[in-house]
Image 1 (spheres, helix red, strand yellow):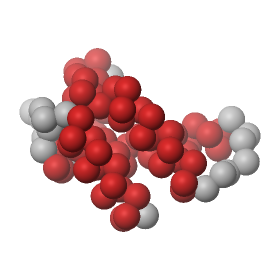
Image 2 (cartoon, rainbow, N blue to C red):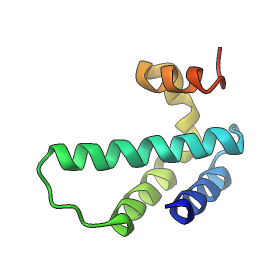
Image 3 (spheres, rainbow, N blue to C red):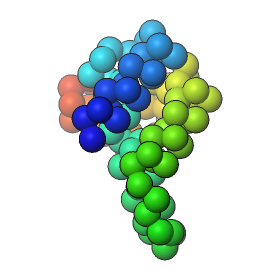
Image 4 (cartoon, one colour):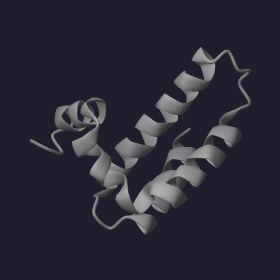
Length: 88
């Protein structure tokens, strides 16, 4: 798992210079968990880590430069980042 997270974190940092490594890594872990949870709740068959990575690459490429702005718009994410002491 760490290899997936590292690749995705690096990609996100290339897209967004507004966040630290720790913030980018947290985003990757949150998005990964959200995607897999939502996919499972929808009753879909798990297609593996490679598919999850592929989806996250698409999200990072599309939303990466503005991803840090979601913290202000989404209470769930804001709470997570506050727990990690990124935002107060």
